[in-house]
Length: 173
Image (cartoon, rainbow, N blue to C red; front, side, top):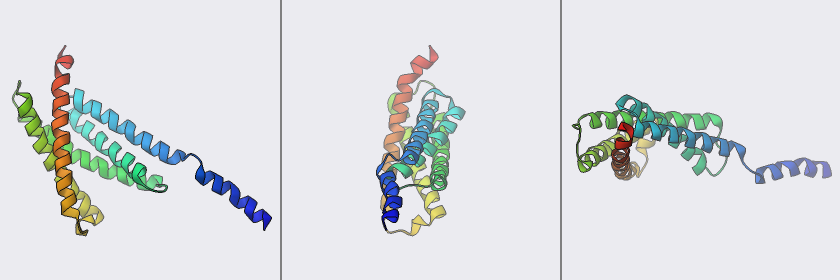
């Protein structure tokens, strides 16, 4: 019986210690997201599209691990990164397409409005794709979550347009 207690003790200590898996998953996700954000701000339309893919992938992975109560397997983390990349591709494609509609020298307000609409649309399309893939679309409250997501996407699109507007003069110099 003492032997069993001694064998269980290291596992208990290990479960109370620092979770390196979770740390690694969150750090990798944040790194991907920051790289994607930089590409979105400083790159042209094609680079911004791929930046959106990285940003979505990073946020998907970091959130999956960060919000989980327990451990997330690397396989499940990879699925979250994949779904996040899909989200980023959809949103990035819509955002890049919407951005190309703006004329050179468009006002900050016009840029923010177009990207807010693109962010809302991208989020809803992404939510629908994710819901269809995972079956979440049947869940009660799905549509309410989609509308909240649209509002967050709109805010993110507007914020991104504002950051890019501020950074554009420095990029041309």
